[in-house]
Image 1: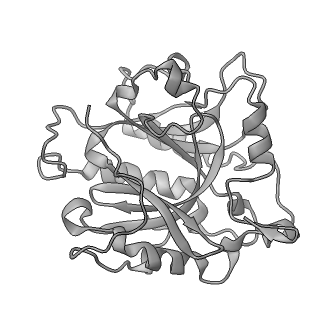
Image 2 (image 1 turned 90 degrees about the vertical axis):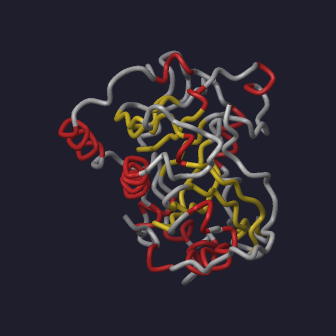
Length: 284
C-alpha cells in the first residue's frame, strides 16, 4: 500500500520552501458500520441537498462560555495567521503545488480523542500540523497525498448502534486510503498508533463562539477538500510511484466513530487535553 504520511518531525529547512499567503485562511475500529465503500455517492443534486440540510445541525454538544473561550491560546489576535506563516516552510512546490487554504480544526483519532490541528490544503496534499500555540512552535506534521485517497466521507459524526457514547451533534469529514483496510488488533487497541488508514476532522470548539471564524468551520473545509480531490489530475499529482485507475469517491453519509464505552476518550475530551489552553496556574 502507498504510504501517505511523512516521518513526523520538526521543520527541516529546504531549498524548496515558500511562504504562505495567510489571506487564504478558511478559504474555499468499526469498518462494517461505516457504510459500504462500494456504494455510489448519488447524484450531485442529492449531495448538495444533503450537505445544505446538515449545515443547520449544531456543531457542538456543549456551548463554551466567554471565559472558557478566552482560555484557548489560539484566540489571541493573529494567532492562526502567525502559526500558518511560521509553519509555511513545510510547503514544497514539487509535492504540494499551490496552497488552497488554511484551517484550525479538531482531529478525532481512532480512539475518539480530540486534538487541535492546523491544516494546510494544497493542490496535491493535505498537511496536518500539531502547532503549540503556547510556545509558538511546530511540534510535528504529516503530509497526506490527495492522490492516495480512495474515499472522502462528508456527514454527521455518529457512534455504532450499541455504543454507550452520547450523540455528538457534529458534522465531520473523513479521508480514507488503503481502502480503509481493517486494523490489526494490536494497532486498533493502541491509542498511540499512527498507522491508521483514515483521518477524521470536525469543527474547532471555537466555531460556535463569538471568537469563531471561517477557519474553524469543517463545512468550509470539506467543500474545499471535495473540490481539490475532484479537480486532481492523478496523472500529474505526486507521488509518481502510485498509479490510480479510479478517482477518489465522495460519499455524503454518516461517519461512524467506533467507540462503545470510551471512558478514557470521554475524560480526555471533557478536559480538552488535546487543545492548547490556560488551565489555572499552568498552561498546556
